[in-house]
Structure formats: C-alpha cells, structure tokens
Image 1 (cartoon, each protein chain N blue to C red):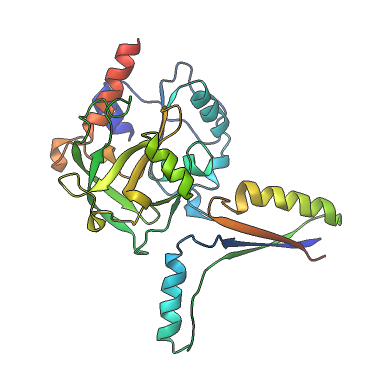
Image 2: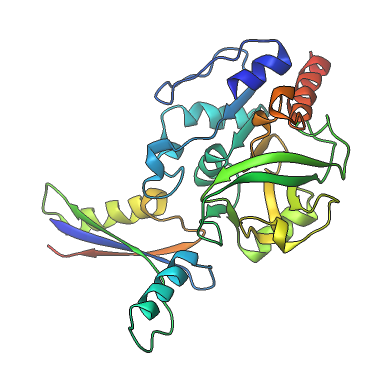
Length: 217
Length: 80
C-alpha cells in the first residue's frame, strides 16, 4: 500500500504505528491497509478497532478528512463503527485469492474521480471474510444514498452471482459513510498499479485522490 | 467471581460455518440434524466478588468487543 501511494503520488507516506495516539500534522488521507491484525482473533478487525490510534482516526474522519480501509482495514472500520455493516465469512467458507471485476458505481467522489461511472476494473481479492452483511434497512439506505461505491460484477458490469465471489449482499465490494469521506473496500487496488504485474486498473483510485488533493490545495 | 458470556448469531444471519459443520455431522452419521449454528463462549474470571459490577462490566464488554451486535446476540451469566 505504501508503495502504491508513493508510486502514484510521488510523496512519501508516513507509516503510523497502531499504538500511537496521534496522526502526523497535515495528514490528508489515512489508509488502513490489509493484513491479519491480531490474527483475526475474536472477529476480523475487532481488536484493532480499539487500537490507541483509532481515536485520532475518528477525529480525522469527523473533521471531514479522508479515510480508506482495504480488506482488513475495511473490517476494522466496520468494527469501529466508522462504516455500517460487517464482513462475514465468505459464503463458500473458502479463502478466495483471485482477480475480480469491480464496477465503479459513481465517479463523483474523491476516491473514484479517476474513473468513469459504470467503468469495470480488474482488481485482486485475497480474503476469507469479505461477505458484506448489514440489516435490510441499512442496505436499502446505502443503495438509495449512492453509498455503494464498488460492486462485484461480470466483466461487462452486470450483476452475476458467479462473479460475486464471496456472496456479499447485493454484491457489495465497497461502501462509503454518510459524509462520503470514509471508504471501505475488500479488493486490493494497490496491487494493480504497476505494468509489471499485468494490470494497472488500480492506479485510477490513487491518481484520483492525488488530483483531489491538488485541487483542494 | 466467575462469569460466562455466550455469543450467538442473530436469526436470519447466514452461517456458512454452521452449514459446513452440519454437513460434517451428516457425514459422520449423526442422524436427524436439522441445522447447526456456531457460537462462542467466553469464561471470564474477575478478581473481586461483586456480582452486579461484574455483570455490568461484562454487558459493556459484550456490547463493545465480545459481540458484534450487527449480527450477534449475547448473554451474560455470573456464576460465582
């Protein structure tokens, strides 16, 4: 993740330790990357959601700062209550490690301005617990408020159960909070930013964020 | 002071692990299993003997950490 941020932005990201209590001054974007925090003990992200640094992350989000959680980061944001819903065990009960097709539902956010709405990108997933679940009324709100940002689809952007690899409700791969400044997604766009791996579809997310901050400056 | 917190899935929440276990029980030859849902048990020991305090502390702990109330219910029993 740090590599992708450095590569696309040309700036050095600061690594922040979970037990720290402050974010660096002038932080624009907080990223909670993937991993296996606390060994996924209890529930994925449940213990990390109480890490000392999370108060500072909450304050940053409250003040309108951008936060992005990928994979375990998404799980942490849900457990911390910064995003609704929960990521459950994949419906197949299998760990899934493969490329998926993600439909960009809207391009008018800081995270997706580097794409076109409706565009389908190829991104890898690698998770055992990516099955997004929320109460029916929460899902209805997410959909009606345009807060589902990424969805698992077939290569043409159409819903197809075969392409919803983990069984997530409404094939939801990524969601935004109410203020649209906190994003969580299960797939790993940071792993598709270099031509050497055969696909650079993930660059648009990071490039769009760079453009967002350049414009705000 | 001993206590037990039991965490179970809310009804209506899919439990693929429970389904996998159900299949395994069938393969094992356990007849008549209609369904299986997997939960968690936490056995917790408190240093002091105040049951009311222990119960209140554990309810708080269950709400904040031991259970994810989006998908799980919990029960706190102070057993002494």
